[in-house]
Length: 422
Image (cartoon, rainbow, N blue to C red; front, side, top):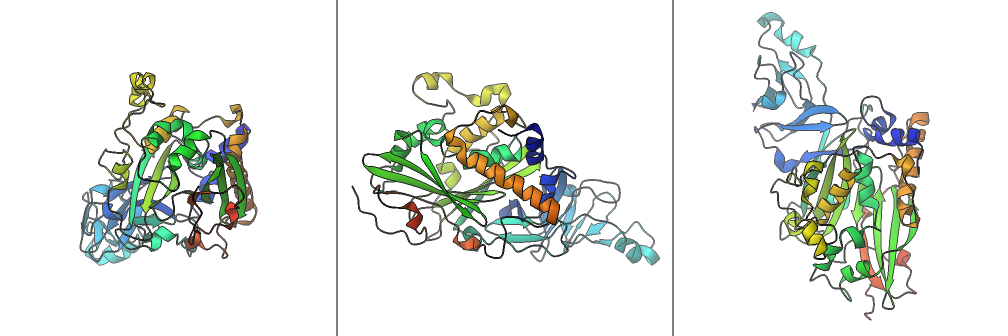
């Protein structure tokens, strides 16, 4: 368990909170590229308790600036996006993608240009990759190296980013993405319905047959590699997750199939953007992956908008539970079940009251690394998990069945060997 002070340190992100200061030093997914069109409506984005707008100007470049116009604080989400700039509808002040005021038509003509140059505007650098607009919100004059994960380098059509929003702290969201032990319980109804994903037998059967996987780890400069090993029928089933801190969990996938990477991004202290990014390095994705997983709200920027909340008990179906459905979150994907459990803990769970077990090894490993990263950043200003030795493009999770004497550490996710069937 954590102390109350450690819990506060890890969870608080607004204002001058140490964790918020650290997380701002990384490139952060802000919104989907497809959400903003050239000369189209700005998109409101809230990060770390602050409100911004993302917009694409006439020539295709992207801006990310404070939502409140610096003049009288009217929302720039209402602005006119035209002629390579965003103009406030209140008094016509105009801003470019660099966050500079380039016109203040309410000022006398003789001093308009000089006045506009003095207007302070909060803006942040952007980078577009993997179907996502990323922002750097830190204090360095030159943004750090962009983490060019495999999915950020793929052609259009190979990547589908989707965002959910949950009413919890960012760490609760992250920990749900790291917890492999819950899969055979919380998601058992969904796993039982999976078809067409056979290696030697349905991988779902391996997860359902062993509720207490053994965990092994390899430390990595970006975080760690974790293997959750289940044993059944004389075979081992290894789910090898890649954890690229502070945000990303690469979910194990069968060789040759679509992959998923998830990340937990703080909207504020008690609200989180949970990204699910489906991608296929080998071929274009043939279907809407989130619909395939049971998420049917139709809004890729808030795919769980129809999830309900504590006032409706998240639409849990007790009759279905009595009929055999484990969670009662019927007709939804795994993400919904994760979200419901995380929200049920409250906005910021009190981790000093936990009683952890063997299945939580990955949870306390991640917490320890994050606490160490905060301490390092406060003492030296250096970021953890992001050294020049990190090859982001070679981070890929994988799952496979193998003989008990085969070492999972020898498996290359980019060149998995043929493993003899049972």
